[in-house]
Image (cartoon, rainbow, N blue to C red; front, side):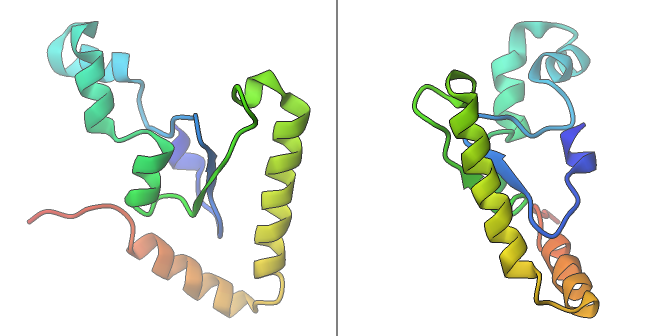
Length: 115
């Protein structure tokens, strides 16, 4: 799933995308043997950009053009490009050692843990 390939110094999401290891329908099918609980599964998966930001799984949310990225792909590409360049400029002056240390700290702080 998406979470398995989202390893990097900076990870961003478009505001209307999902970031999850399994679809709500598949999760519902596994847990309840039915798709009837897909909304409950979606809530439990915490798959929205806002959820991912709160859990510190992403660094930021990229605002989409009016109507969503699919309604104006060229504008969406420009917005994403601008964010990539901004992130690159923030990181380009760091040493390899600093990059690795920041990355390790970032991934160590992710998620919620319950005893």
